[in-house]
Length: 164
Image 1 (cartoon, rainbow, N blue to C red):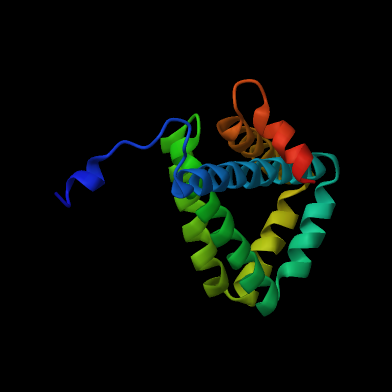
Image 2: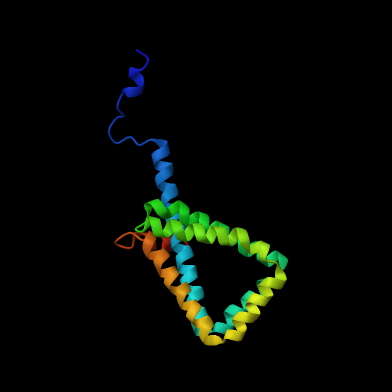
């Protein structure tokens, strides 16, 4: 019988190649998501301490190339968060956040330089307290992302340290 060959159990201790690569890929995506969370956290902290630094970076990125790069980075971050969501502590929250960031990345280049500069001028006019408040939102999002992908005993943190 040709069909019985497909039903034969695997020998104990033998892993399928797809299982190994899937597990390894999952760990890499979790580590990447953790690094993204930590980067967002650090940028938020910088914005709280030195709000003008965030505005300077924003004004520097308000170019056609800068908008495309920002859009590409957002799309990539969104894809990573959506990919890691099923293996995270908060799969729905991370999937929704990833989808929002992904869509924001698609829309970013469509804003155009004049509109981006107008938004930055408005942010600048709101003052340092406004920038600090939004930087605290970034801190919270960074913590949420990092916490979502960390194992209970911090294994993702140990993997991230080994990766760098």
